[in-house]
Image (cartoon, rainbow, N blue to C red):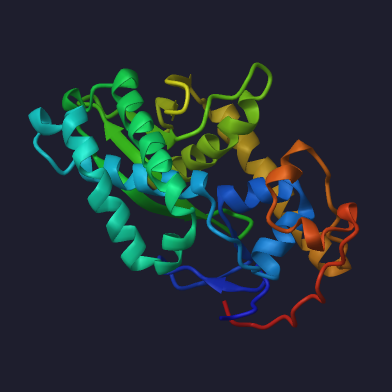
Length: 282
């Protein structure tokens, strides 16, 4: 595996030009949450054990993606539930280590939680009444600053009048009051990329929270997306500054309880590993 620094030059497959660097919404969120977490994941590229919550999200996303391959009348709760076991078995074939993720006694409980999330999806929307234009779509765009933005969008729908709606599935619960902005950052990031690629601002962004059966909707405008671009560029500049100085500071919060790297974090008495040697490979 390459030990390339994320700030090294990379090449976009779209135009083949060298760019300043590349950033996805998840890595940007990592840095905003905790610069040291970003370092562990994107610079050191430390492995993390699979978590039941993350794997549930992967399985549910795959089922909902495949559901839209079926004729509209077949997109039913029974069909989705019938896809669970095959999807889980296929994922285990791709990643055999997942078989050891849970003790055998807890596996059925975990599968039941997957079923609950899938059933709740149908309380949020009726897929038989929707037609997805794109699913699990890889998108990227190069900003004027030569920063490459990229990521995967769960679903895009285009109305007959050309209006674009971007949807993202979350298998957790909706954020509480005052925390919506952090959740919407990812969607505004995708809206910015879509705007740059298609030349049209998406009419609607929606987050479908299948853990609580709620939907968070937002209508972006040009001012929103220009502000998002400035924020993304500022995040990248902060990442570059941390890389040059070697100062990747921890930012302790209640999220630390879910971090796989506590043993290496100074906030918990740990010592980070030496930084990997930079390379020009990407």
